[in-house]
Length: 247
Image (cartoon, rainbow, N blue to C red; front, side, top):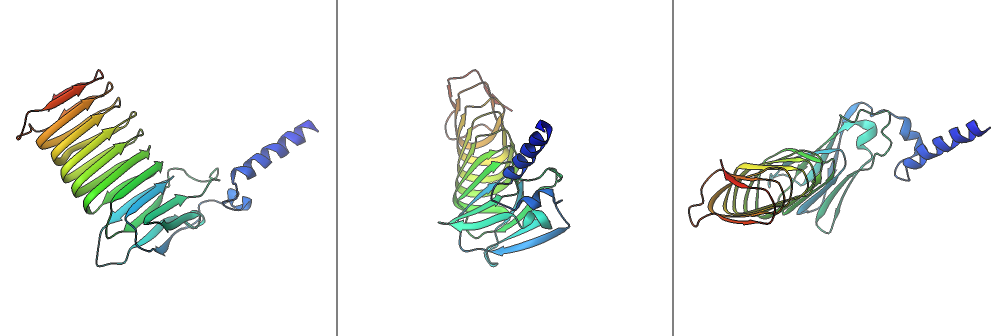
C-alpha cells in the first residue's frame, strides 16, 4: 500500500512540474518533427530571452519586425512571444522535457529595426547577428549560454553576470564592459575608443582600447588589453588580486 502511495506522489510531482503552462499530457511528448512558427510583432527596442533559446538577430529596416521560431513542433508552440512596453519578451515555457534531447535548442530568428537592449536569462544564447547599429546598446548576460555579437555603437555596455562566454566584435565610441561571476568576455576584436573596464569576476576580460583605457580590477580575474591608448596613459585601479596586462 505504501509503495502505491509513493508512486502516486511521484506521478503527482511530475505533473505538478508542468505547472499551468502546458497540459500534463504534453509532458510525455517528444519534441516532434522540425517545423517553424512565424510571429509578427509590434515595435520593440529591446529583447529579453529566457531558457533554451538560440537567438539569430538581423537588422533589416526594409523588412517588418518579426520572430521566427524553429524547432520541434511540440516545443515551439509553447514558446511565448510578446511585446510589452517596447520590450520583445521571448520565453521558452516548456517545463516537461524528460523525454526530450536537451542539446536541441530552439532557434529564434529576430528581425529588428532599432535595438537598445538585450537581456539573456537561464541558458539563452546569441549564435550570430548582423552588425547591430545603435547609438546606445546595453547587454545583460545572465545566462550560462554563449554569446557572439558584432556591433557598431555610440555607447556599448556589456554586463556579464553569469558563467557563459561572450565574444564581441566591432566598434564603439564608448565601450563599458562590466564583469561579474566566472564568465569570460573576449572583446579583443572590439575597438572601444574610450574603454572603461570593470572586472569583479574571476575569469578573463579582453579589450582593445584606442584613445583611453580605464581599468578597475575588483577580484582575481585579469584584464588583457591589445593596444596602447593614444590619448592618455593607461589608468588602473586595483582592489582585487587580478592584473592588467598588455598583449
